[in-house]
Amino acid sequence: MERMSVLFVGHGSPMNAIEDNCYTRTWKEIAMKIPRPRAILAVSAHWYKKDTRINNEEAPKTIHDMYGFPRELYEIIYDAPGSPDLAGLSKELISSDSSFDNSWGIDHGSWSVLVHMYPERDIPVFQISIDAAAPPKTHYNIGRELRSLRDQGVLIYGSGNIVHNLRMVDWTMADKGFDWAYEFDEFVYEKIMKKDHESILNYKEEGDIARLASLAAA
Image 1 (spheres, rainbow, N blue to C red):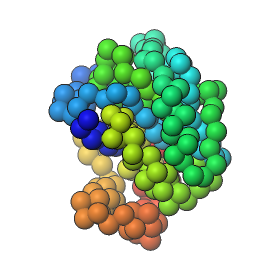
Image 2 (cartoon, rainbow, N blue to C red):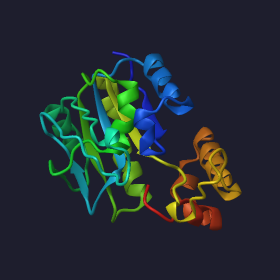
Image 3 (cartoon, rainbow, N blue to C red):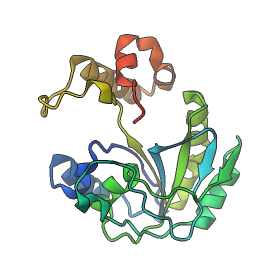
Image 4 (cartoon, one colour):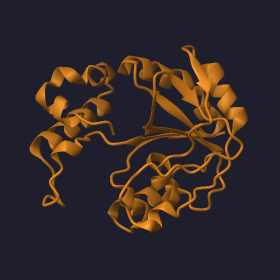
């Protein structure tokens, strides 16, 4: 079996779920270029807990965790099946404390992109939380422990945004961002390309650009 890819997608506005634009078309192209997954392990920036939780439902519910958007967005149901077996295997692979939790489901951090990548909704999806109490290194280590899933056809898919500061949103800047946002985005890209993981884990050392980039949860 061909080793599956790992993806991180900046999902941006929830409106991308119902729009046709350069971002959504790129997501569709990515899905066509990579092997078809056996299942998808989704790590969404919208499921924060004080430990690591894993959804192991047969049929995870669609979570509409956004407010003030058009009704059309809330009518989307991404009713892909779950994967209890792979969720169980994931729990076994994680050495730190983890537990099953089906109080959540597949939130818009996941489905707003997946509706474009896999609109048929026929690939099992299970979601894992972000531990709000843990440092970046903990999540990095969890990722390393889960990487063997790639050899079993599981697409490990993370979503959120590298830069996310809602306090400084300027709606007049529809086609551009702040200089510090571009600078931090470039910092992350450069370190990833150089495989300099330690610099990313210690991103706060970048000072103001890092502080401004992460003033709000993604």
